[in-house]
Length: 533
Image (tube, rainbow, N blue to C red):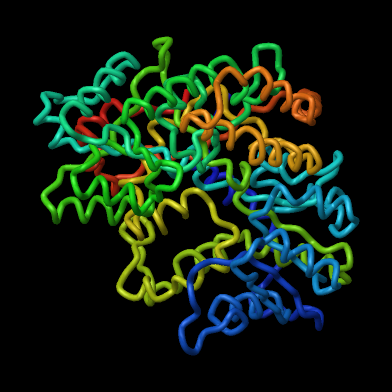
């Protein structure tokens, strides 16, 4: 059965009781310096605050008695940086990484500590046992992971529509079926609009998909890979459904339904098309960009909304893609095999799992950055915005905290949930998102996707290649390692007990701060919310 990981907050509090006893206030630790390498982000440290000198690190020092060396990676490719640092001997402690898929690469080189002897006592591991599959390599645990706070959502998958312009065309509701969608798009063209503004690669089906709506109505939602009824893992973008989808995209392009320059368009360009009133609908607008989009639209007097997907061409529910960018895990905690203070490193990871440490990193100091409501709920106050830099320490980041910090604090909930409505509950979610990464196979699949499939899709749509070459392209994909990779993942899927995707979700019933005002029918749509089964 699927479960909502927002409920894991209760489990977290129980699990972290394993750790809280390890650190009495003021306890003095051994004379060691704990290295913690953390991912990059866009936030700058303000004057007087550095990665090693701030109230969060002060708390770490006070509770553990250890010194800390916090290393923030640069903005360039994280995997490359880590490889260079490991191979030059710069890594000797804890590594917190978004690049979950690199676990196998690092472990195969002997660069990571095998965590099997420690996992049963780890607070972090015991919080998220199921999700920790992705932290394994060759049957052993090399990383303790935190599940992605937005697993279910393709952050580009929400369908934006101009409700006011639709009303002028005689549409008081979005299309409910594939047939209605097709008719609607062509009616929009006749009315002088760009019916479906999008950009990028039609052959991408992961969280970077900007064609998510059209993919969904052709049964391709839920990520790039699926599992058939016999338990075989397969690549969705070489199936007959995919061929039909590509033919339809070609037709939309030829008929002027999607922008002629879609391949070179950008998200900013699509947003401008919506704000100028030239485009009637759009895919590919990120959740965080939706904040400015909707606010600007209101200033301009435009009534832009998020619409639910229609049913697919077989009359079944159409699904958006899912957030597979990091795998099912947002962050992985690893320890260098050269670490000479393993016990202390594990203690620090457990300390970071305590409610006190989580609250401090996510919300700051009570009375300075937040206050407690009547029921003990955390309420940000003036000053909360001054600790954006704390993102580098929000490494034990629970889904509920994500909702509070970003959903409420940054106002993203009104844009997150509309995308989620089209993705939570998909029975055929991408298994590669939550299985242990097979490094060689992933490298092969990535190369085939980027160098063969994605270019072919774009070329067919733009008339530079023929759909008649489909069988040859599929044959190449299979013979160049695609089939072997699918076989390896099928075997791994069975070995892992045929697991199901665990969804993170932010249903409005549990979050009264969410209003649903940007859903097509506002609060009325919330009453008919789509939920996971």
